[in-house]
Figure 1: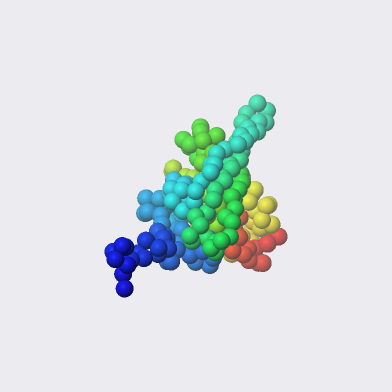
Figure 2 (figure 1 turned 60 degrees about the horizontal axis):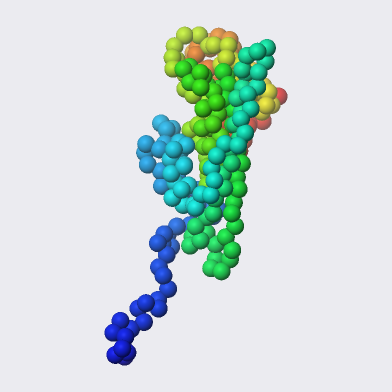
Length: 242
């Protein structure tokens, strides 16, 4: 029976309803990454479905109380008076929203994330190679948000810029980039080209030589190599290792 002095009963004594609802998974759970990626709009992904920095920034502010997000170190590397690399470090500090992260009563910590990224003539194509600090800055920010959001994917900014012109012979910067990645990953050049021949070229005949590839074919080869380098879940086949 409702108290005559309180015609609304105990409606105001009910616990406050959580706005995000029970469908939001726990931060870091198996469902978390897919949930975050589903919040991105089509314009916030590139042509291959990878998330862009602007989308990750928006979603992070939607899901977190962001305390700080800023570059805190810029390093320009020079050789013989010429800039060869620009490196930026990024700092992200945030507090996850209480209602979908931790159990009731537990203190919510402030989480700090650091990220680093570089931009140089080998991984930035024209005309963007004239803006190496800005490119490194965006890449570092993108990586910081990816790490803070616990995403199991590669962001758009972490991939090399696509070549503006895909016709003509392979370029020396393309070959140099492939050589650097192969050295880092312990990949044998000839074994790699033989293993991925069908993925790289439709040409028939003798074995592939990197110096004889077209620019478009070398672009495909470097895309594969970058996936080996950046995707921890993509294991390098034993048959292409040194």
